[in-house]
Image (cartoon, rainbow over all chains, first blue to last red; front, side):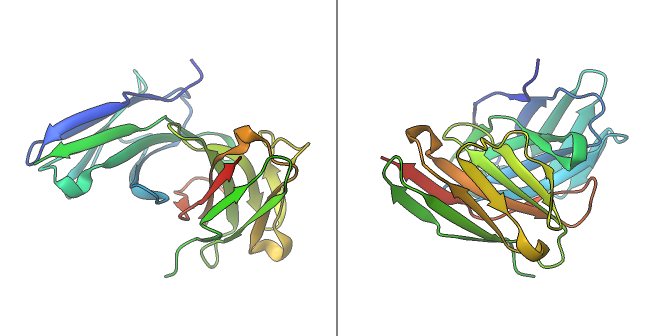
Length: 110
Length: 114
């Protein structure tokens, strides 16, 4: 397909781990990104991974990349209420253009 | 380091009116992007500039949208005339390099067309 796909909603309890999944489209994408968007705000870059890597860890965030299946995931350890937001997966395509998914709304319940 | 600045933050207009949005990218960033984000969707690229030249405007509805980046710094995006379906958040982003690397987004301008 042509779209970057993400599940639309995820709900977890505070302190649990969250896993947000994404499938992308272009096997030649060189970079894959995760952005966070809070209400009324722009997109905040969380992390990104080069396509020649299969894992990247940054504090509570772990990104896993399966190039064969074109599958990307973001794991947030010890999820907090402040992590409630919409998370966008994006792939880089030609000329550094980005193609975004529709976003996954993460709700963290106390 | 200051982030990407955009103004206005909100704009309400009637259909067939004109509107303009302004963006100031992060200092030194060569590449500037305008995105349209319709409610419930991810951002979609409208136009990409590298310095003051257009790299990609294939998704820009050129019959009503125009954009410029004079002097390779600030940019304006204009809609004339606006339609109801133009209601969206218009996001500006910048990146330092000419290929690869992350884009940094401004807070966006929320446009409502009545």
